[in-house]
Amino acid sequence: MYKKFSDGMIEVITGPMFSGKSEELLKRIRILEYANIKTLVIKPAFDNRFSDDEIISRSGAKISTHNANNAEEIKELFSKKNYKAIAIDEVHFFNKEVLNLICELADDGVRVIVSGLDTDYLRRPFGIVPSLLSMAENVTKLHAVCVKCKNAATTSFRKINNKSIKLLGDTEEYEARCRSCHIKGEFNKTREKIEDNKEEK
Ligand SMILES: [Zn+2]
Image (tube, rainbow, N blue to C red; front, side):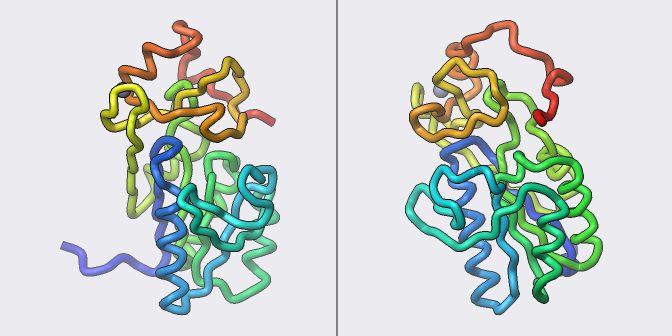
């Protein structure tokens, strides 16, 4: 078996909402901090649900972030200091240019850790995350607890009838559900096919 990975690698932390993805990301950032590995921490600029410039997990753990809208801004931030690693939260909100940048950075020897939803509120593969899962050296898939039956939850169920892919929210708008309970609660039983999952501008 292998002894170690090369310096450049991609790690993905995924799963539904309320599964502790940000908590896991924060833990890994802290471990890099303890090892004095300089890490750039990024979150999407428009996601200010919990804080403008911090990632805050639901347990209250937090860490300072840089906000970015796109690959260009991430690249600029990364070039400012001698970073050896980059962590990106809510990576499902970024586009293919960010996916390409992540691959370039990993190829250049940077350790990249990302966290994001693998599926959207209709259980469809979400944005760039499926590609990241394919290309990653390491994948951690977390589960929440289904609010209905208490089995392992793998999906984020939207409690309100809104069709925007980018609807941000917390417990008011979403809850974790297992496959079976998600299907029972869907507002639109004739859900759109995977190919209809287009990136919103
Ligand atoms: Zn259930």
